[in-house]
Image (cartoon, rainbow, N blue to C red; front, side, top):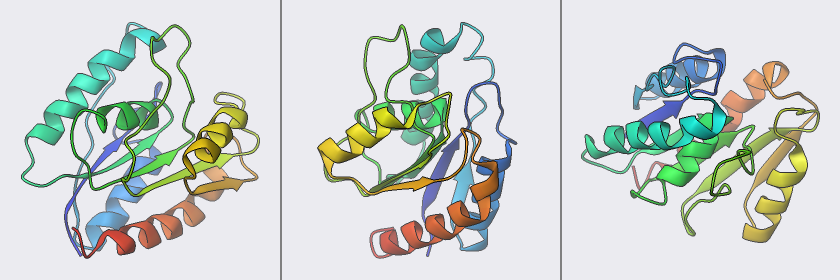
Length: 175
């Protein structure tokens, strides 16, 4: 295997957050190169104010690579990964606890057609209610895994890693 992966943490979190750290370590064990941008300073203006600076930081990270990366994101990290993928080619999107919108931000969540994508969400997510991501996945006919968990998906980390492995395996010929 191999290729590049950029993992984006959520708000009120950092590049050493549990999910992105576990997924990065797992991907590296499979031969992928990873990076985890630190968006904490971008988050200071609040949720809506953080989106554009985060997208700029993520697009700049993509621009340093020789190949389109896989983008992995959790919550706000998932939101900006989707929007950044509209600006730069990516090899895939693995998105957790994705908000369908950020209140006060001008654009709803979106991602390009034809990019391998997987959405993973908790039924009990009270930060990013599941109805929005369910409707988005239904409109776009995207794979969506719903689990009995909350926004942090703390009880699902092992299953997320398993799904991530399957997701990366399907990308291996292109990576």
